[in-house]
Image 1 (cartoon, protein in one colour):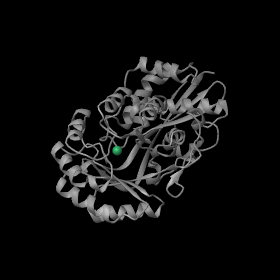
Image 2 (cartoon, helix red, strand yellow):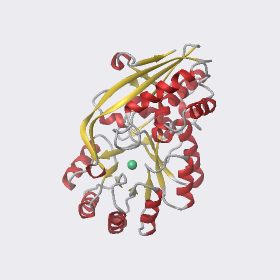
Image 3 (tube, helix red, strand yellow):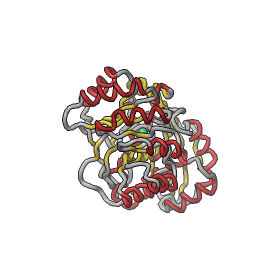
Image 4 (cartoon, protein in one colour):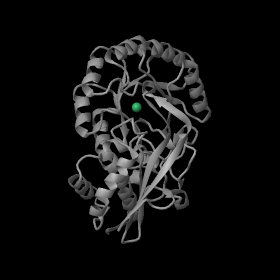
Length: 364
Ligand code: MG
């Protein structure tokens, strides 16, 4: 089986509400998404999506994905997409780095492998765990009252685990963390994600003042070095997210005891093939994972949910549950606070070509 055609689509995905995090450093109202359709000479078409969480969250942006595809796609024609690691090596040889842009292609290759083998991706990734995958909400930074209202709105949609964006000011964060904690009904959980916005002294102050409430903190600072310094001066459970890009990053975080879990974002680590290796490492060392995408519609989310459904350690996030535009039929949806990977072979998502519009590029 050979790749015979790669189509690239661009969509602007509007958020239901403008979103702010990392102390307002990151603020946006829509996401720039790139969707790819990879067709083979056997007539199978696989789908994937790459969508950074705005242009200011990671070293990744929408136009960058399409530029990388323009470089890579012609070099992939003729390869067998089912040989995932052969194609992975071909992509890494042709263009080192740029994992966030390769991720969309990698998902499409997995989709083709699944369709060809008659299995949903979760069964190719270790096997479906029957329990549904718990969803966490994503609560933008605001005043304590605004954040409590956002949590209530998420609760009304079934969410019981809430990732609340905080930072950078300790004087604001400590009272809002205490207020969110005090407002929480039994059976629900919180996490406080600084998205690297705290300075070390701010992180130390906030974590030491609120760790006894029992909620995890996420990505206090930018780099592993800085997170390690904060770790030495604080207690509490820590998740690392943005600073875990490679398997080497994860190995170092484990070796130095920097975290109890990670945000395993498929786009950031370079696709499902690479994410599966990080997943296996986390399983081996008892680290928890939120397995999710950096952003995107149901096409992106469903790839991440397949890996989460085969893993089952903590939670996932559905970006598309925060959008006003739906790109596809099927896929992993919010079922009152949890989700489930589709049973159909492959990704189990049927994109609506009318909504995608004309391809912005076709390689064949
Ligand atoms: Mg995070």
